[in-house]
Image 1 (cartoon, rainbow, N blue to C red):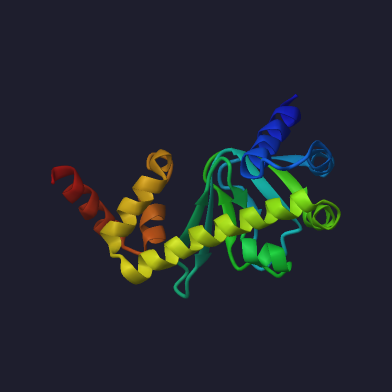
Image 2 (cartoon, helix red, strand yellow; image 1 turned 90 degrees about the vertical axis):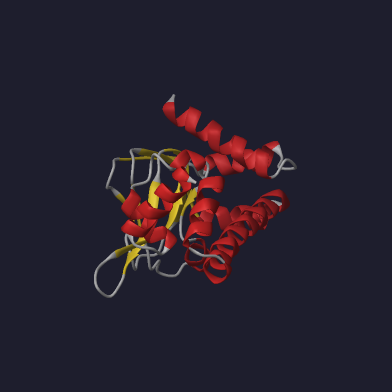
Length: 198
């Protein structure tokens, strides 16, 4: 029953993103789906591994990070409900991912193998369109993040995060959020205090 509900949530997200998708196309997707349950601190993807299946987050929260030269963890993304647990460009190219993707909370994922996705693109125009729409969303999100560092400052990046992810503020630690914003924890604390008092 749990698998059926999780699959329903995923297929609903496909229909929302790509309303033109057909019943046979959804049926094809459904054939390849599996369920994965992870606990906090479980690793979904290890660095330098090739991801053979993509994970759609039905519930929970994951963090994408890497270790810099000093060994410090640098957060680059948070993946919540409705997102894909993947480093998209390495998944598409089937090259080793340079990041670690780890659960912040207990998480339930629906997974779909890379080979099944590619066969779906080959056989069904609607699925190819869906893949393109997802890729466009990922590209827009990455572009906003890059431009936040080029054209913005720490405070504007924080405000953008709050505006785009209000539900994550109480789910992400201050340390993880600070590294995501490219600032020290103390700087983030000062920014938050200043915004509260202003």
